[in-house]
Every structure is written in C-alpha cells, then in structure tokens.
Length: 143
Image (cartoon, rainbow, N blue to C red; front, side, top):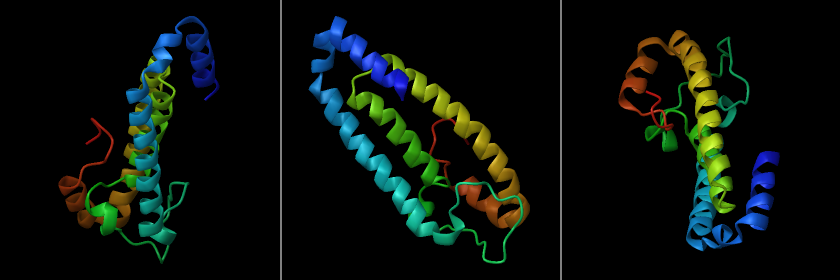
C-alpha cells in the first residue's frame, strides 16, 4: 500500500491533471464497495467454514458450501479481495500500482487456490470436482 501512496503523491506533484480523472476514481470507489460486499457475503454465507488459514485436515463441521454467493463463484472471498485491492488503485488513479497490484494479487491467488483446492478435492472428492467444473473461481484466468 505504501507504493500506492507514493505513486499518488508523485503523480499529484508532477502530473496533477492525471489525478483529475474523476470517472476513474468513481469507478474505483464503486468497485471497492462491490469487492468488500462480495467478501463479506462470502464470510457470512460460509460462516464457520470461512477461515483465513487453509485447512489441511477436515473438521467434523466442515461442509462444502455451494449456496448463496458460492453458487456463482467458488472463491468469492478471494474474488472480493482481488476486486477491492485493484479498486484502491483505481480510486487513486494509480495506473502503475493498478497493474502491479493486479499481477501480484493474481499470482498470490493462483498459488493459493491451487493449494487450497488440492485439499478440497481430498476432503469432498467427486462433489467438489463437480462443483469446480460447474463454477468459476472468480479470479480471471484461474480455472
């Protein structure tokens, strides 16, 4: 986030007209709210199944959540965070950090989703496989 603040300050000082692109800022604000809402819906829908740590052992209460927002995307919490992180840079009209955030966040979620889904397939077998085939991940270019 420090890079985003630095880019904003430098561009404000040397390219002030760039920061007057209000349509981009408004789009960023709308996406920021949308990303936050998506993430919160994921947390509420999954309830105790939502954790910040990938579970490597299946708990007795662990169920495959496919209702609510999970009907639309497999990883709405990750999708919401991804949208939110990019939106912060659109809000600030930071083109360099927007691209950097897009790449770094995508790379993080690419690795994390692969790792997490290995366990989900182990826990839920064919049920998860069918769900994964029918439901997009929510992050572009991650099957």
